[in-house]
Every structure is written in structure tokens, then in C-alpha cells.
Length: 364
Image 1 (spheres, rainbow, N blue to C red):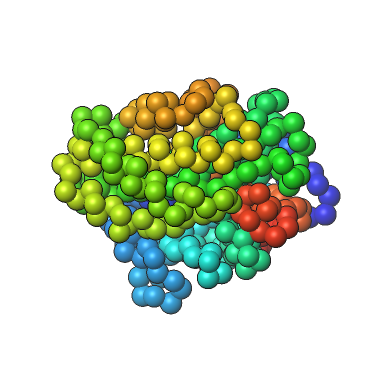
Image 2: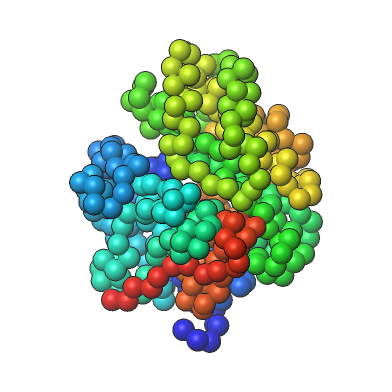
């Protein structure tokens, strides 16, 4: 695609919290957002979640990976087939393992299979090139966050936080016209978010999540554990930096001695405290933190964030965005950038040496 015209792109995202597949359409030329289109959601069943969870931490070739990939592909094909009018698909896949320090990252699911099934070009494997070039390969949504900030007509620096399995934050200066401009963005993973809470609920109570943060609200935060968590080396590293879902598993064993409610409260407080710690790295303070992802539905998490941050904390819906679909929309936007040969990451977002593009395009 040579000429940069606005096109309808269908993006899909399946996060490490394993709730399901989000899909959403965006009309964009890879620079500007012109319109947000319809969206849909396809939850994973408990059995599907268990199969994918079994493959966490595994690399291609491991026997558990093929079973997980088949579920990811089937679920995506089901939800994406509900749409019409898209010229292209942005497919993130399911992250099973992420190890940028050794130049590797693994998202399960074949874009070629989806291209054949849906008879549309599919842009996928967004992270590998960045990791190969020495970047963290994550987070990738910041370029889209910059476009969103400009879509909202923001003029002052703000931050956008996504609370999925892992938290990631983007500091944005919307006065600068393009995301790869030095000083326009700073982005990095804040720390764990929903993943350890979901794991706790699954392991102890057979539930997929702490709905609304109700269990956490009934517990007491072990503040000593929170501070011990923040003392770990990751939180003193200069960003950009990124995490794997399971990077802090050894530490979370320390919550085993806590009651269900106290463990949920402490894990929720840890997620919020990580964001407050992350704000120390912002180039300039912000007056507004806009929150997307499943974590914003957790009232206890949002209350913890408001308590620990020195700014207004609001869901992204307050500026007209859809916090459930922001990451799916991001991969629609990034797919257009890949198709037009535009960068998808930069030194200030993934630590890659220069602004580069990623992704490959599979055609039916």
C-alpha cells in the first residue's frame, strides 16, 4: 500500500490476564485517528484459559504451545469473522513468553492461518523485530496513545495507564506532532497488575478475578510487603523497560501466608504502588492519569491509585475512549503503520536504538 489513505483496520488483542479476545475497528492513515468503529469480545472458557495458562513461559516447539496456539487462532477467527468492511487485520496473538534480554519474545497464533480463514491481509508478529534490534519489544501501544491524546485535543502532558495482566504507562506530550519525535513519549511496564490477583483468585477460590475489587476491599494491605516489592531492582532501572507476566512469581510466594482478603488487598496495593513509583520517571509531572484495561473496573485498584498518585486518576471513558478496546484498537492502528512503512516503536518506548517498524504481513 503506497498511498497513505485512511483505511478501516480491524485489530485484535488477547492479553496476559486471559479474559478473552477483544476486537475493534479503527479508520486511520497510520498517523491520525479518523473514526472508531464497532467492537466485539469473545471470552475464553475456563478450559481454554487452563490450556493457555499451561503454556505460559514456553517457547515454540514445546508440546503445550501448539494446543494454546490452536485455541488462540480459533477464538480470534470466531470473533473477527463477525465484522465486515475491514481492509486489513492487526493480530497481536497471545504472549506466552517474553525475554528481551536474550533477544526473544513469543506470541502464539499464526497470522497466515487467520489470513486464509478470513480472506484478508493480516499484520502480525509486531514485537520480534524490535527485540532483534535490541529493544524491549514492549510496550507497543504508546504510538497509538499519542494518536489518542491528539484525538482528544489534549495540549498538556498526560499519562495513559493500561492495567492488564501487566501494567504499562505512557507519558505523552501531545503538542509534538508525531510519536517518534524525541520528547513526545516515554513508555514502559510499571509492574504486575491484574495477573497476580487473577492467579490468586483462581488458585484459592476457583474464580477468574476479584470482581470490582470486592475481596481486596475487605482485606488489609501488608504495607511492609508493598515496600519490599518496590525495593526490587526493576523499579530502580531507568525506562524504557518491560516485564514478562511471571517475572515476580518468587516474590508472590510471600503472600501465601496472608488470608485471601489480605492477599488480594496487598496484591492490589502493589499494582497501584508500582504505578506511583513509575511516575517518578516522567519527564514532567502530569495532572491527569487516564486508565484503560480491566483494572479500571476494580474500584479498590482505582482508589489505591488515587491515594498514591499526585494527580487526577480517571478511566479513559472520561475523554471519550473505550478502555476495554484500547489495545485492540492499538493493533489496528499499528497494522496501518506497518502497511505504510511507518515506525511502530522508538528509543523512548522500547529502548530500541532508533525509531523502527515491526510486524509482518500475511496475505490469503
